[in-house]
Structure formats: structure tokens, C-alpha cells
Image 1 (tube, rainbow, N blue to C red):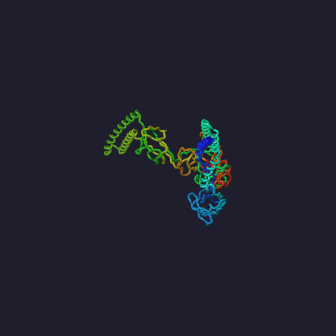
Image 2 (cartoon, rainbow, N blue to C red):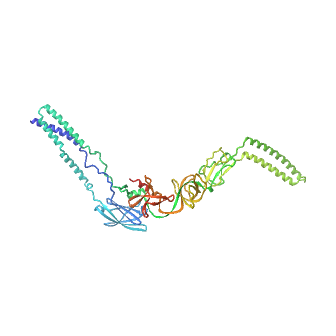
Image 3 (tube, one colour):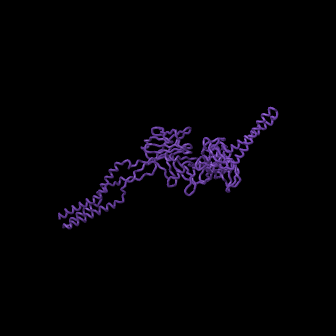
Length: 555
């Protein structure tokens, strides 16, 4: 009996060792050490506004961060003086770049709940006093007792091990099996059986614990504010993000605005400041001493840009030689006659009138002879008709050109027109603007409209007022011409309107210092820079006019 009990104890001990091995293999997992999910709440903050200022106060630890903006435009205000009332008296905030002011506030740590902060703001000639409310949360017990939490976690682990019934069950089972196993063969079978039971039990414990994620979760995220879309559709954009996005707003103002039409157009040169370089004879091109001018080269009216040598056919060469021979013979005869007349004039046999006529006849024959030589040798000079730059044309030495061919085109880049095409005839078009795919807006002056049909449209010419900048001939633009009619609406920059995926146009209204709401609107073009909001918003609302595309992408 004693032998059976002793064997049972040995078997139970072996069972405990096998079962506990799996348990100890899992002891490295710290249940209480798992990181909490990242916090999504924002820092304690409060806001206030007046007709001139918009202010946001953010509490972070023992510091206050103050954001000061112009209320109407959301532009950060620098070089302002901000004083905060503290238990020790007024304290001036320290200015940081981009309209940010900071202040140490250790007295905030001593309290929790609602706190009212009084600030006085002075910026230029404007001054105001604000009372901003902050809701300071209570300190987290978990954060205050981090070390105690680690000790409690270790103690809890030992308690879990003691409270686990599986080792005690295996110990009792081994003891009972050893007592009832009397023979050596039975003992051997009991030992194998209990070993299998211990392995199976340890495997079950591992499977039971597989639901836990061994990979440590992400550390607690910092509580820095971030832009996000709220459940009601509004967009929360903290002030630091607004400065990154460079968000600007404008107060919507209603009024009577002119109705405009939108026309396709392209930039053309001013007809009075452009010219073509062509040849009147046709022939072979040759460069001037400095070479042919290339594209973009500035030239002046009268500059020689090249030469054209007219070709001479074989038949023409034969006729010219025959004509030259006849002229040479006539010149020789007239020269001998002139010599005789000069001798006879002294004696009075020949009058002085006959002598002068003979001299004139000889000079005419020589001029005709020289003209025949120039036909074969002289070239036509290509002269710039106007001052400007070379806009088109790449002449090459030796190139044969015809009389109808444009060799070079010259235009003045400071004098450009816009040719728009309209499918309707409009009277009273006087003011207009044009805008290309990228580039500034161009102010236009109406010059005239054609009546000839051009692909079922009528050309309308406008002159660009002032410096056209980087505009070039041939560039496509969109022309916005005022028709003279008026209607009521709100004028906003085109950058304020974004188009949703369903095609609807919308703008973003700043309803508070850090919240923006989307408004569906209906628009019409006003000019190249602005649109008219017909419905969707009311006058006096703050509408985002810069950075609206970035707000539309916040999720």
C-alpha cells in the first residue's frame, strides 16, 4: 500500500511538471500591460469671437496655447498683445510664429471641471476683452499609479496560478492512479496514461488561451488634435491644421450683379502690331550678316532679316546676254558721236543742245546696261514691317520660297487680342474678362463683333487691357462677357466652390472657430475670378474661399 502511494505521488509530480510547463510557457504574456486604444478626443479648448477677432484657447498640461485670427477672413494676427488673468495677476502671453501665443498656467493642474479664462487682446487700433470657458478633465488614476499597476499585475498573476484548478486535479488523479495500480505493468500503463492526460490538458490550456493577441497593441497615441469629420457631417479642423491648410474665409454679401455669358476664345495678335515677312519675287533664301533671327528674337521695323535671290532661267540668261550686247554696241556708237560733237562745238558747227542730248542718251544706255547686271546679281532684302518679336517661322539658308509663303511672323507681345466665338448675337458687350487653364485673369475691352458666319458662330474681338503677362498667341481661354442685365446674388471667388462626386456644387461655411459645414449651392459665372451664388447660403455667413478643396478631402 505504501509502495502504491509512493508511486502515485511520483506520477502526480510528473503530471504537475508537464502541465505546469505549458502554463509557465505562457506566463510571459502580460494581460494588464496591453496598451489602450488610441484616444480620439481633442485637448480641452474654448473659443470666443467679436467683430474683429476670433480666439481659440487650448489647454495642454500646464500650458495654454492661444490662436488669434481676424474674424472675417480667418487670417492669423501677429504682433498683438494678449494678457491673461491668473491668480497671480495679469500675465502677458509669449508670441510665437503665425498668430500663436503661449502661456504657462500651472494653476490649471490644481483644478478640474469648468474654468473661465479672461483675456484682453490688443492688435493695432483694435482692442477687446474675452471670457473663454474650458472644461478641464480630472487626472486619470491609471496615469497617476503606473508603478502600482505593474505590482498589482504581478500579484494578480500569482493569484491566477493558485486559483487555477487544473494542476490540483492532475495531482489528485496521479495519486489515485498510483494507489490502485498494484503491479509493475499496471504502473507502467498508468504512467503512460497520466502523461498523455497531462499533455492533453496542457494543449487544452494553450487552445483556451489562443483568443488573446500576443502582439502588443500600439502605444497610447498622443492627444494632439487632428482634423476629422464628425457624425453629423460637420468637419472639425483644429487651428494648427487650419494654419497648415491656409484656410481663409469671406463674409458673404448680397447685391445686384451683372449677368455674364461664357464664351470659348483664343489669344490672337493685335492686327495693328503684327506683320508678315514675305518675298515679292520668290527665290532662294540667304541669311543676313548676323544670321537668320530665331523665335523670340526682338526686332525693329526696318531691320533686314534675310535676302531672296530670284532664280534666272537658261532662256532668260540668253536673252539678257543678247540685250547686253546690243546695249554695248549702242553705247560705243553714242560715245564716238559724243566725242565728235565735243570737237565741233568749239567751232560752232554743232550746237551745245545737241551735245547735251547726246550725253543724256549715253547715260541712259549705261543705266540700262547696269540694270541687266543687277538682275543677275542683286537679291531682295527681307525687311521687318513692324517692331516686335519673331513669333513664327524658321528660315533656312538655300530654301526656295514662293511669293505667297510667309517666311516670318512678327508681333508685339504687349499688344494682344482675344477672339471669342458666340452662337448668339449680343448687343452692349463692353466689359469682359478672360482666363486660361492656368494663369492670371485678363481684363478685356470690346473691339467689335463680326456678322459673317464661322461654323455657325460669330467672332467677337476684345483687346487685352494692360500688360498681358505670360499670355501667348494661340492660347485657348474662356471669356466672361457682361451682358448689361443684372440679378441678385452673392459674389464669391471660384476657389470657394467645390464639386461633389454626384456633380452638386457646394461651399463650406465656418460655423465656429474650428467647425465647418458643407452647403449645397447653385451658381452662375460672374467673371474669370468669381461666381454668383443664387441659392444655398445667406448673406453674412463666413464662407471658405481658400483651402476648400482640402476640406473636401477630410474623412
